[in-house]
Amino acid sequence: MNKKILVTGADGQLGKTIHELYRDNSLGLNFTFVNKKALDITDKNFVKLYFDNNAYDYCINCAAYTNVEQAEKTPKIAFEVNAEGVKNLAEACHVNNIILIHISTDYVFDGKKEEPYLISDDTNPINVYGASKLAGENYIQEVLNNYFIVRTSWLYSKKYGNNFYRTIIEKAKTEKTLKVTTEQKGCPTDAVNLSKYLIELITKNISAYGIYHFCDSIVMTWYDFAKEALSENNLINKINLVKAHKYSTFANRPKTSILSLESNK
Image 1 (cartoon, rainbow, N blue to C red):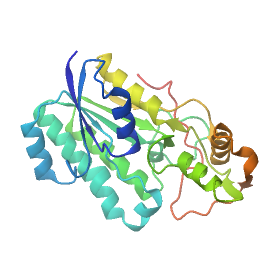
Image 2: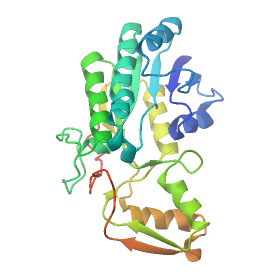
Image 3: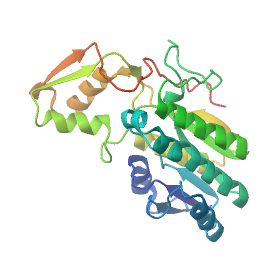
Image 4: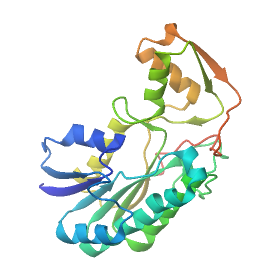
């Protein structure tokens, strides 16, 4: 196959997971992993220069500003990364004939729908993070024809990053009681499974470009997810896990953000 793939945001949980799973190039894929220091996607001129000097078939964009709470306080930074940075990548991919695979989010929806969200459903983000990610989606669709926008939900890695799963495990080691909300429903998605899905888009030579949904299949509340994480790590009997029916958060969050996989092309 011998395809060349650039992975941006390589220091994040998804970038690290892709690196762990595919660094041996056993599939005949030639990966280049770059972190923010090596390629800051918000630097338009440097992005252009980097792509002009390096040839790739695909770019998997794992670079993102994902701090939902902080995004409300510093929206400029969120939009610089999730919107303008994505536009820079899209323009560079367009000029150099590179297929862009971009990771988006369930937070482009408002969470008012009880049924799983279809790709065709209207977007209506209710926080800055979701709005910035939707702006990135829109830029890609304006600039490119050959792209995959993959919306996912409640992404976590058991090994890497600051995510809910790892935070719950760490807190359980030092705290006696954990209060976790039951107010939101979604599908926690393991970065391993998302990584495999993204690479399959390449190895199967999928050419039906556009927006896709990918998440794991079990619907949970954050309380359910915490309970499962604690059980997996034999901590469930060592801590008092309490349901919290009120959720104190600075950012508005979708109450139900289940993604329908049946709507994929």
